[in-house]
Image (cartoon, rainbow, N blue to C red):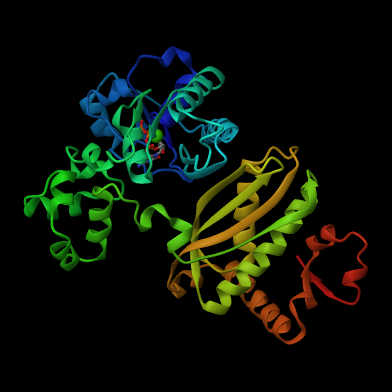
Length: 398
Ligand code: DCP
Ligand code: CA
C-alpha cells in the first residue's frame, strides 16, 4: 500500500488558516529537507491553483501569471513535520511495517496479515478517514501487490482518492498511462522514448527485452516497472549497498539516554565500516521497533555525503526525535547509511569542522584496530552500562 498526502504543504497551510480553504494557494519557502527553496520557486500548489497550471518547482512569477488570484503562503516547516509525524503514526497503527520515503509519503507493508485484515480496502479507507478526522487534511492511497503499482495508484485518483489494483492486473492498470506517471522518469528520458515512438507505459512494456537491454540499465529498470514488477528502485535496502546496524534491547525501554547511547554505539560501527570501505553515504535511515513489533523507519538526505560517525549520528538523532514520542517503550533501534558515492574531496576544503572530525575518527579507527573496538568509546556509551566498571581504564570522547 502506498500513502501520499495531497498537496501536502498547501494542505497544512490551509489547516493553519482555514480561510484559505477552497482558494488557489501556492506555497513558497522550504523544500522537503527544510531548506529554503531557491528564491521565487513554489514548493506546491493547492488543487484549485493547479487548475490554472501551477505546480511544484515552478517560478512564483509564472504561477502568478497563470493564476493572478493565487494566495502565496509558506514557511511553516515545523508544522509540516508535525503533520507528517501524525500521519506516519496513524499508518503505524495499522501497518506492521511503515517505510517512509518522503515527508508526506510511505509504503505500508501488509505482507502476511490476511487473517488480521481479510480486506485491505477497508483498512485503506480507515487510514484515510483517521487522517481526515484527526489531522484535518486528505490523503490518497494506492493498494496493490507491487510497490510500483501502489505508488502509481496513489497518484491515480488524487486528491482524496483511493485506487485498488487487483493482483495480476498491475500491467494492464499501468498500460494506458503516460511514461511520466512512473516515479523516476524525468522529461529527458521521456523525450528519449518519445523519439522512439514510445509514449505510454503499455508501449514501453511491449518493447522486447532484447531491445531494452541495449538501452542500458536505467531503461531496464523502467521497463520492469512498466511491466508492474518492482525493480531496484523499490528495494532500497535489499539491493542497493547499505551499511546498517540494529540491536534489540535486553528489555523494552523508554529511557531516552539509553536509546541514544545505543544509537551512538550502532552508528560508531556504521561509520567505522564506511570509512574502512571508503564509502560516502548520502542518506541516513533510522528504524525503531515498538514492543508490539510495529516497526517504523524514516530516512533523510544529508547536506553532503559523509562517513563521519558524528555527522551520521546527529542526523540519526534528529530522525529518532521526529519519529518517537520519547515515552513509548522501544525494543529495537537501527541506523543505516545508503546511497554511496565517491569521495568528494573538494567539498571538505570548505569545511574545517568536518575535516577535523574525520581526522579524529580515523585516528580512533587506528587505535581500535590495534586495541579493539572498546578501547576508545564515546562518552554517551556510559548510559549503556551505568556501572562504568566495564569501561575502567578506557579512553572516552564525545
Ligand atoms: N516539495 C517541494 N519541492 C518540490 C516538490 C515537493 O518543496 N519540487 C514539497 C512540497 C510538497 C511536498 O514536498 O507539498 C510533497 O511533495 P509531493 O510531490 O508529494 O507533492 P504534493 O503533496 O504537494 O502534491 P500531490 O497532491 O500531487 O501529492
Ligand atoms: Ca503528496
